[in-house]
Image: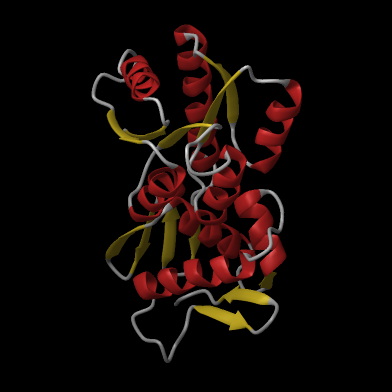
Length: 226
């Protein structure tokens, strides 16, 4: 398991890392101290979990969350000193899965993180799909097509699931955005097009016979490959 920990205080980062190693001794903890660095890492690498402070040195933690959920579906645990109810609700509304008070209580942090990862795994296990020659194993983020195993990012996984469930039908940008982020964010259509372009590059052997068809201004349609 690989976890990204974003906190301007190295001591807090060390505490979170050592706490994660209690239930997961082999966990790989990637520390960073700023929101911009965290966003760059989250976009370039694949993480199983992000833990972030809501008070970052270069940006608001809430702004960080808004930007992160535009391109990633990674499970998020946010932490904050003197967490109040308003901040808690705002944090969860933006897209964090858990929000805890700093300094963290180790037992609670471990229990909530375990429960979060179980929920994520449970959702994926129930969503294995087949459409013609295309098979998706959502649990391990893998698609299988024409003898090839294709690794997917979390966002690509969610989009492909949604298109496969609605195979042959036009799936709107708004519908895809809700699957990804719970609501339609400004700029989400552009982000979705980027994800679908990446899926095409991974899945489509012949651009002249597209599997993922763009319905201009509306969304996308999956044509079952045969």
